[in-house]
Image 1 (cartoon, one colour):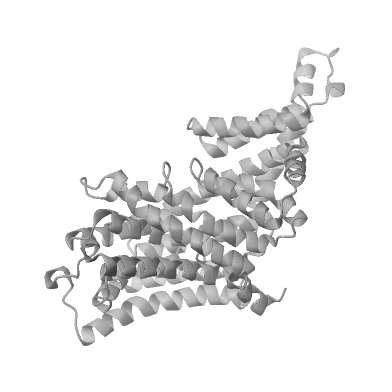
Image 2 (cartoon, helix red, strand yellow; image 1 turned 60 degrees about the vertical axis):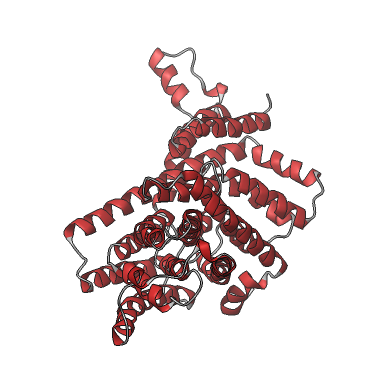
Length: 461
């Protein structure tokens, strides 16, 4: 086998091993070290006439081990990746500050005259909460505990209610401060500030399409979302409603504006803004009487666990990618795609189909860290802006949480749903939202200014 063929075999073997259920980060490192040892092996350095110990030392003198150590150091010293644990901590502490349940209750009462009022309130809460945390699982779980039982109690269709929670909870992967965009920035060297600016309008466009679908379906078929009965609604009227709105929405809005505004207007780096957000989250939790030692300890634990997962994924993927490129796999893929003589549109469609299919067995982190670098050299050939490509991917990756058989959002919801709710009902509820994602991608391609307007306005070309 030639080196490029070995590289393709390495990629295929990785996918096969992952499908068997092995941990992805450590599989990447193992594959990188094993195939890297082969790639960097230099027979001329072997001291076969020396002692047994000299021979062993000579065999261990392989550059793959230096590469693994250097990649680990690069990940741990990355300024961009520093923002990840800080944003994660902000999200986890806000999640436990009892703000979201107040916000949902307020919106639920405010929107009571709209078709599907509870679903509308849940979607708006998800969108707002997404701007305070980039953690998909946390949003789906929290809203599944908070809004889903109330919708079922109000006689909402199970699939209709499930789709709302799953789709709304996934908005955090797109709407800043998305952790996914930070990972994409670290992978591609695209400015995370520009990515945040570019993701705002597409993120809220997608949320708007979700709202149109939810209200439209409830209007066309009232049985899906019956109008709430008085006993289903909180008894909040008059000044109490405005006070609850003031104490739930305004603090969260100020926290979001202080963090994202500081980033977009260049007042702070993402890491500095995330640190401010973490401090603000602690202050909010204390103000609402929700800051306990147990909640703080739990937030720190979840932050460390998730950050460690992302960091080891980077160590493994960068080692794997370096070996894959050294063996010529990246060049082979590039030459093959160029030989197809595709137009930029056809390349974009092909790339998005591949990412969509990868979303079935893999999570977004593996797709971004492992497979996006394979596409990067091709973006230059097809004259596609990596910033624009990143927003398309962020939209596309919504589907990886909603599409069976993996559909992690569906499994998050099933884990906390009542026993009578079937996984097939949840899957059925998520399917229409895949069409909304597709429509948003078509709109974004035909009107690139949806993503590019804010970066160009604030930062120029």
